[in-house]
View 1 (cartoon, helix red, strand yellow):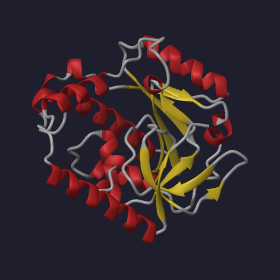
View 2 (cartoon, helix red, strand yellow; view 1 turned 180 degrees about the vertical axis):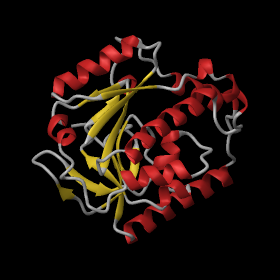
View 3 (cartoon, one colour; view 1 turned 90 degrees about the horizontal axis):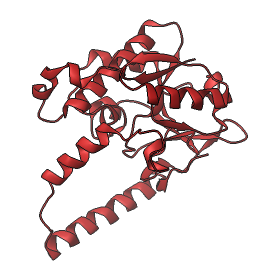
View 4 (cartoon, helix red, strand yellow; view 1 turned 30 degrees about the horizontal axis):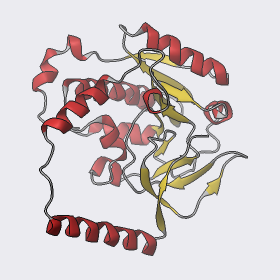
Amino acid sequence: MKCMVINLDRSPDRLAHVTAEFAKVGVSFDRVPAVDALHRPEFAATSPSLTPTEAACLMSHKVCWTIIADGEDAFGAIFEDDVLLSEAAGPMLSDDGWIPANADIVKLETYLKKTVIAMKRTCVSRVFSVVRLYGFHIGAAGYIISKQAARDLIARSLDAPADHVIFDPSLPTSSSKAIYQLLPALCVQNDLIREEAFGLTSLLSEERLVRARANSAPKRSPAEKLLVEARRIGRQIFDIWRFRREKTISLA
């Protein structure tokens, strides 16, 4: 199984960081030059739902999907260059024999937030298990995708950030696929774990924060808060009935 890392030509510091991470676990990777929003001014007007960096990020992931779709391997692993790898990642990235036969995508990352997973898990090593992922789990810094799923995504018209395209169950690109979560996760984005030692602050995160502040909703009334809470409880009851549960994915 080929491992690919998306990296901007103008980010040699990130390349040095991710090279050290993969060397730590004894795994090689192919660098995939990222599409640079600075060189693609048309992205500013591409879509009202995507920032220029999100559009460039989506195109970068699409380049990787194309490599997998055209390759010989049944699966490929895609990483972003600010990823931190677990010390136990090596065996999982060196062999794809543990991946469920029906899997379209396996999320390797945690965003350290709650998501919805199946109650039943399958052990795939002494350390890791896999479980079906049913909730939206943000982030696309580390995942495995099948050749067929890559072909499907390439053929679609995409108008959402890469991690939404892959992991948002409200979108047809995700809801139609068998998606698994690795437990515990074997990678996490650097800026979620520690202070910036490598200058790896995410441009994507910065743009999303600016947009969220600009679009921040007014405070809810007591009646609206009650309705939101009722919906939340309803979702929890539904998940229990479907043998699902909320869980924050930990890092190995």
